[in-house]
Length: 219
Image (cartoon, rainbow, N blue to C red; front, side, top):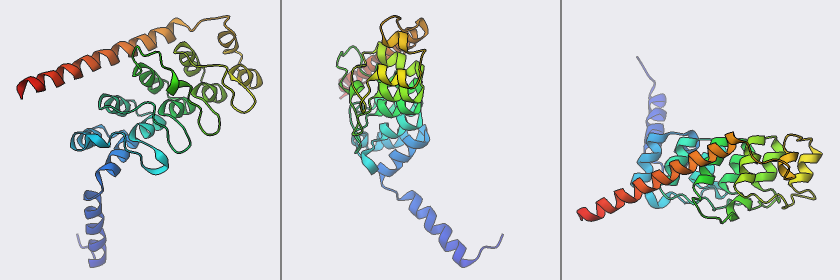
């Protein structure tokens, strides 16, 4: 196979660039693409970069949540990713996941809060006044809206001139109105899903803590 000198130089240049990318760029790309092997490699190499902000104030967790990369989210949470951090538009990872309809990622981010009753990150509005709950309602993601309500989402926060009930009424999300009005409770499917994810997160945390203690004992 023959290759021209120019093509060879371009190929060589691209290979060099690919191997000399800053570690934080590799971590962001791995989170975006769900490349778990690469993401783990970068976390192991530079764990302090897990909460580093890049373009538009996105952290690796923001990207993984936005793209619905649940395995990447799990890995980042285990490495200490901050669920409360906001990007330049004021959006939290859970808001992005709710907007895009990634139910499993929303479950993961809710479970990461553990037994903490602080719902600040859950109810944090972005610069446009949108919350995770209001985005879920507006986008028609009923299961996400239901689990957010179960976790303590504030339905009184307004986005524009409408609160959660107002958006559901205006957009004819009739399946959510009984839940929003307190006439129904979240289904067993929703409660079981959140409980299972919370148990999984607690177990993961215990294993992580035990591993840290074991390492300390060896020193």
